[in-house]
Image (tube, rainbow, N blue to C red):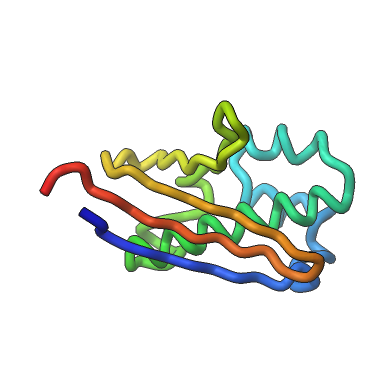
Length: 120
């Protein structure tokens, strides 16, 4: 059963100036994500940061909470699966299945999240 759907779209220029600001990066990315981020070139860093930001916002919208007291950026990690598919890991352990899709264009990044409960 689908419990929630969330989508988020962000213009890359909105965070382009924050790619090298460690405080912003540490606020958005978990330590595991930061390790991947540090290995990327500057163009890829922007896409990576924007994609993770967008995915976490989309997840919070799907939960119906938004980013804040109940869900923070640090509660969620986006990791690559075996075939490169993004997978969202919740540090809150809701027990739900979370599907995430990310995309980028020259000017935007977007994420779509579906939260599915395996119990009816």
